[in-house]
Amino acid sequence: LARSSTPSHPSASQFHPPHRPNPKMQGYGKDLPDALLPYKNKLTPRFFEVRAKVLDFIENVVNPALPTYYSQRDELLKTVDHPTKCPEPPVLNELRAQAKARGVMNLFLPEVCKLSVLEYSPIGELLGMNEVANYAMNCSAPDSGNMEVLERYGTEAQKKQWLEPLLNGEIRSAFAMTEPGVASSDATNICTRIERDGDEYVINGHKWWISGAIRPECKLFILMGKSSFSGPLHKQQSMILVPRDAPGVQIVRPLAVFGHEHDHAEIIFDNVRVPLTNMILGEGRGFEIAQGRLGPGRIHHCMRSIGQGELALAAIVNRVHRRKAFGKILAEKDTIRTAIAEARISLTKVRQLCYLAAVMADEHGFKAAKSYIGMIK
Image 1 (cartoon, one colour):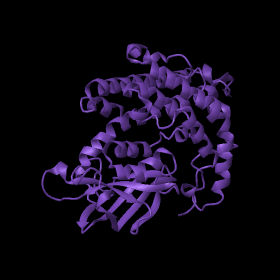
Image 2 (tube, rainbow, N blue to C red; image 1 turned 180 degrees about the horizontal axis):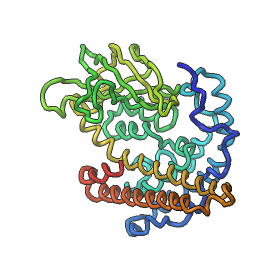
Image 3 (cartoon, rainbow, N blue to C red; image 1 turned 60 degrees about the horizontal axis):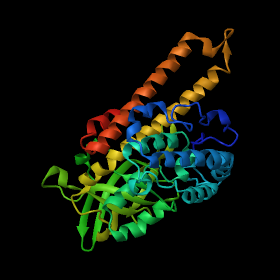
Image 4 (tube, one colour; image 1 turned 90 degrees about the vertical axis):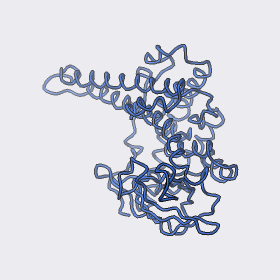
């Protein structure tokens, strides 16, 4: 793997406070965000308690540690031949311990946070504004979706072996579904074969855009493939647990986005053998699991993206008040003001649509909310 010339995260020297969230940003601060006012009657005391804890953790624990985090990462980058192989900065384990002690770890799981989908949504936005808080609270994808799968569908033995270390932040994971040869957004097209041979399954296939697979902390893949090539179309797919270090797992390369290589891997599974006990829920249940995994995950993703959008908009506003061109501060120029206004309107609209999707999921289930979830995606 050739080392990328540009690190995928800011260095300690690049990090500076204007890019942190501030209380004036939508969704941030101690007061209830304006966008939640129409849903005020749906918010429980637990929501206000958890949100206050998360804000306190971000402000008083995570933000002071950010220079250390990026400084340690810069030093670790010097020890590897590609940024995707860089280990996590040690300070992250300290932050995870603090998150666990404060009761804000693994909040994406309803069993942990005791929040509705609507109530978790603005928490997700806060985590989108601060990637290190997201890591420290163990709420980042693809691990969050994989942990939901294991919590909901895994056996006790699978939970003991894989879910517990994932919940503790001791290991990371990846979700292996997308394939280069087919339109993988339609899961019925998946071609990777999962074939039974005695007391094992043999897996053969080609995957790519598998996020989080290269990082050294990744120890597990949840792989989707076909265990049957006949019968009902939506009963042919299965999900199975594949240890990353299993013989036959070949990580080919990281794939590039806009010319920069990130931790999205191309992977070959060549006669990979795993025990029968690694099958999740049973043969032919993969499509069912996938639909259960994708519903809440899509809402979480969208709210984190809104948090990123708020951070980007705040950075723009900060910049246009500090730069002058042709005798005027940029903030005084009509085209700049129009662009900022349109960005604010777009963020506000999509946030309300996310909340609508969340309420539909809470009150009628994810199947009834699928059209709204499709819109926010």
